[in-house]
Length: 296
Image 1 (cartoon, rainbow, N blue to C red):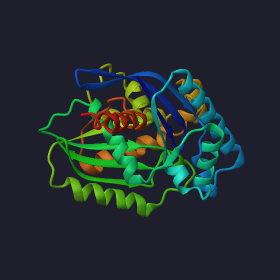
Image 2: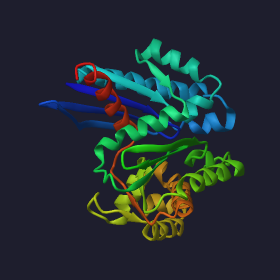
Image 3: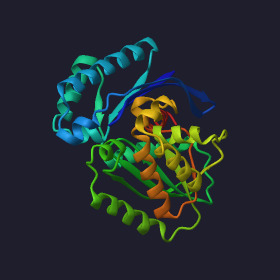
């Protein structure tokens, strides 16, 4: 059995096709195919409040390709979610309707709280120590989702309009930074020994750049700060040509570092685990919970 997850983000759109295994009632999934297309809808949505015809065309072509792959892989269920860029675009729903008509994919534009819920659904992939407190930090192109857990209990969760594309386009607001810091201080001050859990493409790339080989080993605040200073010492051109970063990663990785460092410092977090999960993993887990709870 195969499920598919589609994440229409502000920087890129992703398709994950996963193999679902039922081992005597224990349901797990293995990643089969993961594709990423850097459409960068956020440049339109945050600057012009509208998805341009060109970007809409690129998105629809990507969705048509995803639909074809899903058919070839004989996917039995899927879920497609659009986040911050499509939320803010005045024609977001119109573009979603075109995707339904031209690509045969139902695309749901999810609100920030729903996005956070889907992201932390991926925590099934993380070996949680129930005696510890965790702050999930997911940094995307248009928004940052924070979810505070004590063991497996969700204490607080909120989405903030702070993201890498938004910062690059100078569309981040000082009051949003303040709101995020206030949220962190309010909900973490009574908690001790908080660990970070970082999700998303940028933190996964930063973790690989850190040279840490084992995902069970955390990325420290000090190491992340060193990485930020190292990357920031190169021009955008050299981050691409010398460091070998892809063009659509080389620019966003700097503001991503800034958001992660701000959150960790504000929460007093010294170490962050990076389990290589993100929105698409959360979508697959959501599909599993939906389908297997019916029979469980």
